[in-house]
Image 1 (cartoon, helix red, strand yellow):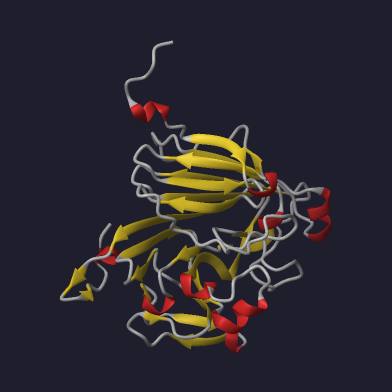
Image 2: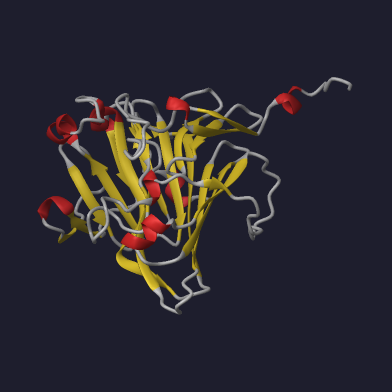
Length: 320
């Protein structure tokens, strides 16, 4: 067999391997050098690196890669319940169940030449049906785009044989890696209403021109735009979140006291992470048997634009 003269042909776009504690892991690679890592445990993205090999997601150094504990960091999937708002465990069960590789995924509407993707599948076990008595198929496609963008598309179908609809809430609980939380701002959520989880879900209107951080924050922003930006001044990097089917956005940082109270989170790690989560929480999604819901997020990381030493009010939000 002749050797390939094109070095890109030697890059495996999808590799099945073992991760921490022998858990099954999938590595996605794009020819320009970006990569992502996904654990079958939780259908959980734990790494997203740009073409310089820089890690863009935060995973705690104290994360416990051992069932039944959810992995602290990356992109946990919150389904069928966000937080403790219901009868299920915190954030539902999808993030601490073993997913499978989907052997026969349905075609996606957008034809793509991307080779760095994987389709995962979660179906309820007898155990789940006892605590949440609804039959479903949750299909998750994770794609690494040609420019290093990371796309997650969820398709949840009601398979109830009894004709009953079911309702759920949902979030991509994304932990972004930032240089210093005090040097970070979020744009795209100005003037919106939010529910403040630190004030018993009191509904408040955001007053700031942009959101900055100097203490604990846990807010659910409502009726949010399809595009949100996280600007990291020190790294001169802007994360852009584009989302479909997910009207809400959670902004969370535990700050120092809560950080110290979490066994799987370093005492000072709150300084280097920020969760901005594409979500559907305020108004639960209801689907009838045979119906399918879709929720998608696309993450990109671009150099920030600077003007007179200050961040230009993010061109990224207006473009693209």
